[in-house]
Image (cartoon, rainbow, N blue to C red; front, side, top):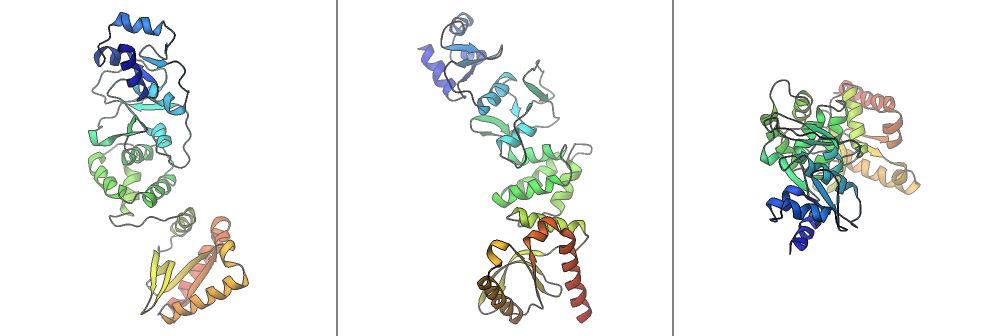
Amino acid sequence: MLDERMRELAERQHALLTRVQARDDLGATWREIESRVNGPDWVEETPRVIRLVGAPRTDHQRIKVMELDTGPDSVISLATAGWLWVLPGFRLGLLEATRLRAIDGRPQSLGVLHRPRLLLPHHITEVRGIRVTSLPRTLFDLAGRLHPDRTPIIVDRVLGKSPGVLPVLHQLLDELGERGRPGITVMRKVLKKRPIGYKAPQSGLEIRFEAILEQAGEKPFDRQVDAGGHDWIGRVDYVDWDYPFVVEIDSAAYHSSVTDRALDKVRDEKLVAAGFLDVVRIPSEDVWSHPDRVVAAIRQVRSRLRRAA
């Protein structure tokens, strides 16, 4: 029956259906569609989209309405895509979708409809049944509007959870790297510092520490290094191989008790015995609240070891 087929399709689309889908995919006539909209089971959401009565109203349904209303060639993008991908700092506000410039537009009152010059099939995927720009393409699109300091932080958060995104970002740089495209300059700088094989920081603390050093003009460290000679000592937070020395960032929760300090001392002695010239311990509180102390500590040990060398 037509009613069952309409319900089945709607259930896969957050309880939504377009009039065109009902006609072209399900074989309904315009009169049959209008009779259902005027009945008890369906309600008009927009002139193009109808909703199944009784289904829960959700944020994802609201986004799906935007996708369906803008046409079968549209895709959710930019800040709305950032929300769908659960990128840090994105809230669901004004909805945004994208359609290629070569496709004729249609009036849009639900949000903003963007028209890029390039949108390839592999730039599109689905999240919870919603057509959306892929995670790498979303990062490129957002780089054109975010503060330049925020983009590398978001990229590192993504790479920390999904390292496989990095090669795709480099591929997209080649595809989208035309002169004048918003965000390309920012992403080119971000990816220059993140070549294939780059290990992203695993925490906000690491991101903060590395940003402090970069802003101070200090040479970066190797992150998360396995240390030890014949016997493995453990993984240290950072290593400067020029001298060499170790940097450990200590939180008060795990490094403030008498037992914690005793264990840290034993570990430091093992690291020195393994060939490191020093172990610098920086309180995590300084990383968050006193970046000047962090820079001073790093510069002091580098200057001292440089003179000794």
